[in-house]
Length: 116
Image 1 (cartoon, rainbow, N blue to C red):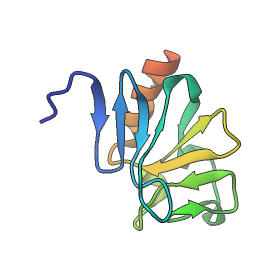
Image 2 (cartoon, one colour):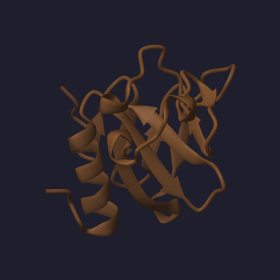
Image 3 (cartoon, one colour):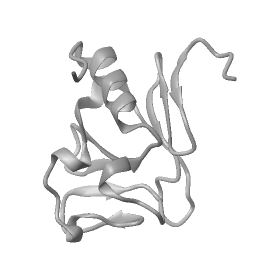
Image 4 (tube, rainbow, N blue to C red):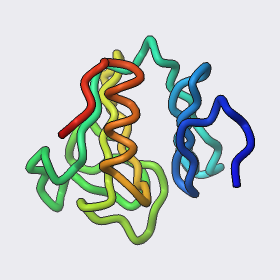
């Protein structure tokens, strides 16, 4: 059990932290380092299944035929994937065990609009 009150959510793919923002694990290729996106860089978040992405837009790690850089997950599917829109030309795609909870936490904490 996580005892850090600053952690809003944590799983093997992502950590959401009140003070730091969203840390995507296994992000950088080929070193698998994490990337933290500060709250002030987060514009919006969506579950991948809501974005009507094609199979060519997905990648197990890296960039498919879209502007989304995907963190490493060799078992990725659209149901467990989330896309974080930032003030960068490349958006951040990652998997999570609970995409609804992750999108709701990010929206509520950053934007004040949890998904229903």
